[in-house]
Image (cartoon, rainbow, N blue to C red; front, side, top):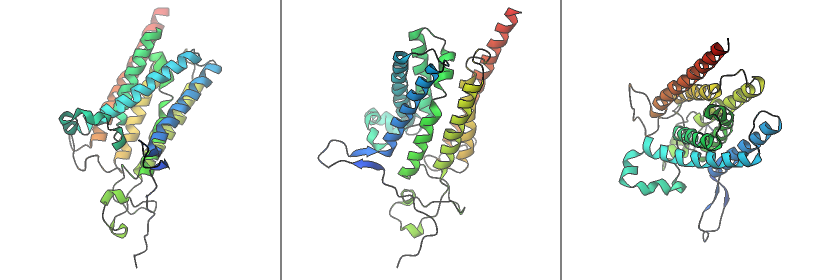
Length: 286
């Protein structure tokens, strides 16, 4: 008789719907659905902003922007994972980029992709990049929230070993080992969903709706997003098993922590630049 488990097991089916074996794709995964839900929420928010007079982007422009964001997210996230986490495998076989069914997306790479997508879009419509970015960045946390919940359902990106009451057993952390021999771990995916997703979503929505866009320095929301995401990610990295095991970059930092430090510095630079631009503009009017 198997020993009774003290902790719940994270062994959800990664597929929402499974297709018959003769079909070219195995089914609809929760992870793929998370991206779709993130884009849907983003599109609905853009529509709401326009209706309430908080955004000048009409329905056609919203559709165009969402197209840029979808491409930027998927290409940036996938390429970022290849370059930041498995560069050796990628350079040996660049075609791995297209094996999306094997998983592998990097949030930091996704941010770079979205940043470039917004930059290209702003140039196309001849709008201020920082103005468009402040609108766009309020959409991102919803996708992060859904994505982290999907990570939990998939039983991936698990946390470090712990004995806290809310710990889970992740079978994929020690495949082939009986469940009662697998140590419980932090559900770090849920921590990230709360901090990087839900908290940021609420914060940016409050900032977007309660602040006067004419008085708020253009680009400030973008800088605040990068900084707060970085702080949340660095905190969650304390409980998350480092990607690639104990591989570190600088001063013993995990790759997620190291990239987040760079993200924080980048966000701080954007915020300071936005405030300086506003101060210079105000001094010229005096």
